[in-house]
Image 1 (cartoon, rainbow, N blue to C red):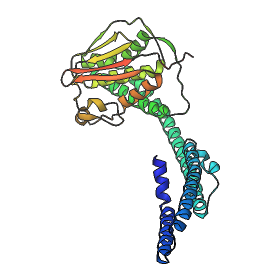
Image 2 (cartoon, helix red, strand yellow):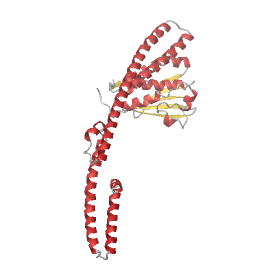
Image 3 (cartoon, rainbow, N blue to C red):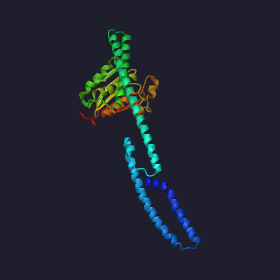
Image 4 (spheres, one colour):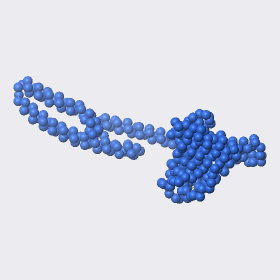
Length: 329
């Protein structure tokens, strides 16, 4: 119906011209006192032929419109699939479309090349910076002082930030290294907790965890990254208290802390890229990238993730280790 109304609006000058001609003939016949039937019959005949012409022309326009709608799904083939031009104006528009398509293709190619160069640069940077980090860690292993322990914790944070950069780059890569198969969940959690053992001890934060004897269909490396990011946030925003890791029915892995919590107005947006909220404004070092990466990774693994929290009462991050949309490799 919308297409018909648009078509009639487009042809309004033709319809108006037909009405004007009918009026001219009617007035002329009236002035010469000729029979009105001599005008009526030709007018009705012209009306019938006009309506027939409009429907045939509308059918042609509708076919072109439907073809254009199908072409929208194949933008790269638009210029090759354009229908034959019907008039000078359509030829001009098609020439303009081809020019725009060419510019669009060049822009996409340039952006892809720029992005690939950026990914290559930061990938090399990440691998290069890991060498001095490993060297500093080896040097600190020979000392056991409050300063060396603090430096070791800071160095671990640097490693996590470097790993976050690499994960961010790999996230949108066309080639992924997912290895989906059955993994022992307890082993993945223990490995993640072990990395943060120093912080648990230095911050005097208690860990409540009992072995979870359950296998999950996932990717070990990427799920480990998600758990580590959630643990990192829990430690960052828990000045004192407890962090617990439990498994609930429905394959829901819950990581709960007794920290400062999240404001109600911030809760719906904490998984958005770059969003830090009230806690982020207090902690100037917050980037708002960690939970965004967790959300993206969980979506790719077919898992779910959500947060429940209240200010000054702590936060619970639930990871739903669902098996849907996953295939074993």
